[in-house]
Length: 618
View 1 (tube, one colour):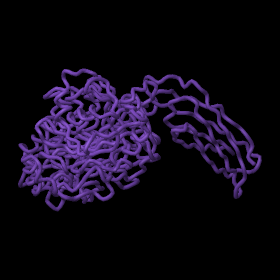
View 2 (view 1 turned 90 degrees about the vertical axis):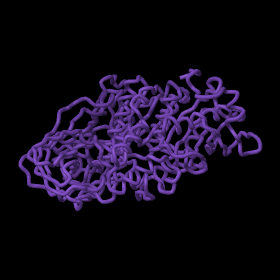
View 3 (view 1 turned 30 degrees about the vertical axis):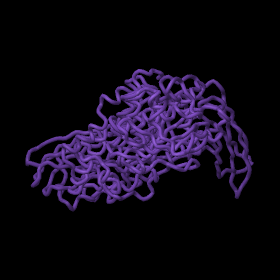
C-alpha cells in the first residue's frame, strides 16, 4: 500500500502543503490543535489533531482518523473513551496520534451532506490524510504518505470503506456497525426501516444507544443533498420511492468495495436493527474475495441495546488494538485471533476459521393450513413499538422448530419459504418474519425480515434468508418462526385485507464452533490445581488452571464426579489465560472426588485435555 500515482485527484504535494491547510493557530506546534482543511472543491473541513500522549520529543508515530456517527461533530475530547469502540484516550496512550473531524455539511465544516459519497466525503478524508502528512508528529512511509489508519462506527464506519476504495494510503481500518449497501441496508426488498425516518430524517434517538452512533438529524437536513431531503419527505408516509432508494444505493456501488485491499477488522452488532448482520457478512465476503486481510467479529449491541449478556468488557477494544498493532504499527508478532469471532446469546465468545462456519446440519420447522391473518394499519406495531427492537407478535402465524441438541451452536441465516393466498386493496405489500426464543419470550436478534407479497387472490410463494443469528442452545430449547403482517422495525402497513399461509417451511443452521480447520495441536499441557474445604455442610471445591498455549481464547469444560454423579460446566478463558471455578457438592467427608478438564480449542489450537485429579472431600 505504498503506491503514489493513484493517490491524488488534484494538485501536487507541494501545492497541497502550501494551500490545502489553514491552521487556526498562529504557527504549527507539536501539540493538540484545531485546523481547517481545504478539500478538493474548496470546501473547508474542520478537524482536530491530538498527538499521542506518550510520544517522545521529535518522535513520529502512526495516526488514527476517527469518524463520527451521523450527524454528530468530530470528537473533541482527547481523553474520552466514547469516540469509537476503542476510545481516543486509549489510542493516544497506545502510541497513536488521533484526528477527528466534522463531516461535510455537519458542524463547522462546509458543504452539504452526501452521505459518505466516494465523490465527496471520501475525498474530504483524502485531504485530511494529506494534512496528516504535513504534521511533525506523523510517521511517514514516503512523500505525502503518512502511516494512517481509521476507526469509527456507523457513518464513521462506512467512510473507512469508501475511503479505502479510493486511497491506498490507508494501512488499516476498523469499521463498526456499518452498511454494505445503503440502499439494501435501509430499504431491504424496498421496505423502509423505521430507523431511517427516526435517525436520518428526524430528531429522535434511541434511549441507551451509544452516544456517538446517532444524533439529532433534523437539525442538519437543511444542509443535506436534495435527494436525501426528498427521501425524508417521502418517509412521512411510511415508504420511500424507488428513485430515492436508488440514490442511497449509489452511495456504495458494488464495484467500489471490490477495490479495497486495506487490512480490515469488521465489527457488527447481532441485534442491530439499523444495519443488520447481513450487511457486514456481505462486506466480509467481498473483502475476502479481494484478498485483503480481513477479520469479522459479531457482538451484542450496535444501534440497539443488548437484551442478553454483552460478554466480557473490553473485547472489542482489545481486538481493535491488536488489529492496529499488527497492520498499522506493522508488528508481525501480534496475534489478531481467529478470522471470525462471535458472541452468542449466552455471553460467551466463540471463534471459527472463517464464515460461513463448518456445517453441522439444520433444525426444521414446518406447518400448513393456518388461520387467516388480518392485514391493516393496526398491525403496523404488531411486533415492536419503538423502531429498534422487535417483540413476539400476538397477531402472527407461529411455527416451532424441532429442539436442537443441548449445547449446539446456531450461527448464520435462517431460511424461510411460505406459500400463501390473500386479497388486499393494495395487493403489493409486506409480511414480516422473525425468530423467537420461546423460553426467553424474545425475538432473538430484535430484528424482522420483510417478505414482499402480492395479495391478489392467487396462490403464491416467497422464499428468503432471514437476518443471521448467533445462538447457543440450552436444554430443551424452543425456537419459533413467526410471520406477522406488521412490525415497528419497518414502516406502517399500508394495505387492508387478509392472507392465509398455506404452508410454512423454515430451518436454522447448526454449525461446528470453536475449532478451525487449520488448527494445530495445542503444544503445552495445562495442569489442574484443586483445593477443598467444608462450608455449611458441603464440600467447596476450588478449581484453577493456567493455559500455557496461545492464543488461549475459547472455553474449558470441567467435569466433577462425586458420589456417582457428574457435574459439567463450561468456563470462558479470559485474556489472562487463567481459569477458575468454584463447585459446591453435597457429599460426606472422605468421599472421593474426581475433576477432569478439557480445553475445547479455538480457530488456531485443537482441543486438549488436562490430567484428571482425584482427592477426598474434606
